[in-house]
Length: 214
Image 1: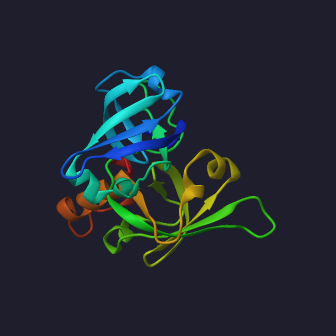
Image 2: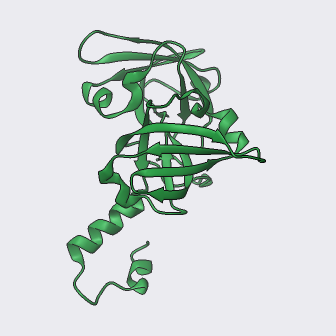
């Protein structure tokens, strides 16, 4: 499990392989020291297994399914990726529960500075089937970053980005139309399943939702 707090921004050294599984190699100076072969790590929101660890780099094998369902297929040499190690047992929950299981790929619309402020507006278009899980003030993981939704208009989502997030993640490298990994709040999906699979008229109350952990 991850929390959506980026620990290091890595730089892609290579994405090799013509067909099938590809090998992604990322330059990183901090996190390799804390890892061993076989460990999991979130790479721009995608939970991957490190198959090669060197002093300043990490290697991952990307399955065809991973390439097809995430933004990792767009990576080229020099691209930046967000890196986060799994949350340690007893650790502090700084963001929200992030599984590293990407739900879909959004389309980057823009990242504009808010007039008169140091913050930015991040705008993206999410797949229509995911819009029902995204709510005002709710949590969403974008490229593995735990963020709070500021506005939802159909499939367009707007998020406020503080200067620290702008500077310490890969968000400032995107161009309009680029794909971005999206993971919606897992609690919303569990709530939907409970309501659709177990609910009967009259027995869904605020008290019941609280009791179920929502």
